[in-house]
Length: 498
Image 1 (cartoon, one colour):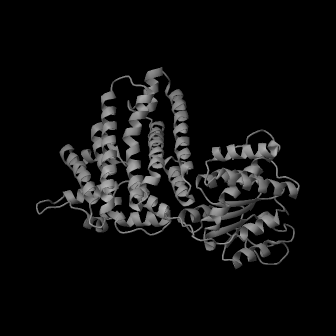
Image 2 (spheres, one colour; image 1 turned 135 degrees about the horizontal axis):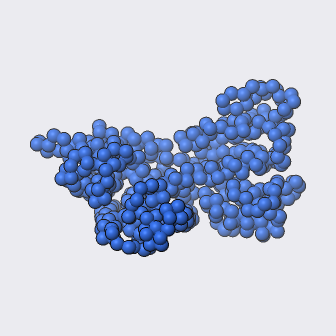
């Protein structure tokens, strides 16, 4: 958590003031109609406003920020199945003089001796079906969240520890209710018992929210295998020996298949389902066909030698075969969008949006090629980045939304998001690239303004941060928490925030 001033942060000493802050931030969240998750910058802005409304000292900023985040997640938390919630208690709640409980790799192994109130709290939570962990921290928790075993966390901790954990929880968009200890210190500390009891007893509301990401990741891994993908492809004739293997290898062997994951994730998040209809499979494969074709052609046009730490396709098989492979993948993508399993009433929209994205991508590449060897402005460079990169994200999002039948509701949001995401993604690559590249934003302003590389990197880092913020700002128009949470996590992965 980024502190806003040099004032030492504290928890209000009086229970009455703590209750007043909790009540005020709940009312603020309801009035502003805020939906979780929020980027830290946005959360800080709202916390500052709450602090001003309450006329509180800056020393209470972090406490107010935590309570604001709690209020944001409370309604969402109610929709998480209780057996997918975790209560995380600090070891310092034990009686340090009398407690002789051992610890293992996860945390304290409570002996239920009754000296402290850890057994009572644990019993309350476990009686409801909630998992409990007594530990200062555990690397296992983040993995459980990532794997979908845990969807929400109730955490009791000191303000200092919450400050350190807060950015990570925000980046991962982990639904959480934080109960700050009333005073820092590692021994015999106390907390607001009623606040913890209320958090533990948040009931299970309907419908339940599910994190589709682990299921989608597994399904994509299974789908992009030769045995599963071959029946969908039309990549062979009686006289072809190697081409089908080349097509399958291009689709299955390289990359992380982010774009088909986006397509499935959009569908599951909008519909709040963990399962999806069979007709989404050919759509997801089509998205990957378009993406891999663009990479093959881009490598040829840029004369790149490697991709995914391997020789590029035209280096491996020669220019004619690589060109033909890219062309085939494009045609195969459009053919798959007419797969018999896909409802006829959405096919024309699928074609139209895929074709629009395809044309924009080609225009971006054409603009980049025309600008090579010429002095270009940063604005031209950013527009090229947008045309070249944003369409691949947009088509993956659009096709998933079209499949739900609710595309018109989300088109404007997804367009703004993909534009910002595409530019930010490309700028991140520019910042990571240590070799001269005339198409890079870093090299562009080095040439334009006569800057040293390190100064150009600083400038482009600021531009990257602007587009990163634009991407997250686009999510604020989403009022469905499941979809917003999925998209927030997606942005984090793509923009290397997590």
